[in-house]
Length: 91
Image 1 (cartoon, rainbow, N blue to C red):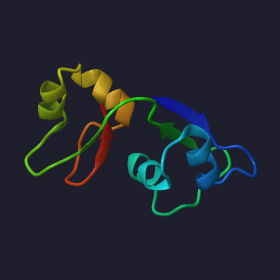
Image 2 (cartoon, rainbow, N blue to C red):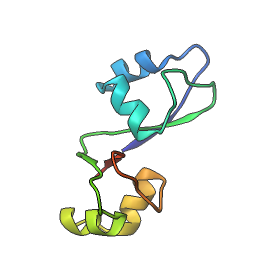
Image 3 (cartoon, rainbow, N blue to C red):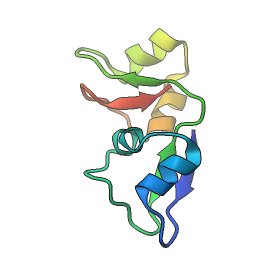
């Protein structure tokens, strides 16, 4: 995972292209409401990690256990303590 700061003139499409990810992935991971980003905003970019879509009854703890990763690292990578159904998280 990498965190980048949006520069003046950046678009979500350009950032996605630069890092080889889809706009949809960036929207999902960063919980954006659309394809617009603000100057100075910080975006999480998945770098070689896996994505997991949260299923019913899953928690951040159960997902960490499933992938054998430290729950605190998983929380930090996804800027969240709680996950919701359909959320895309970085493993």
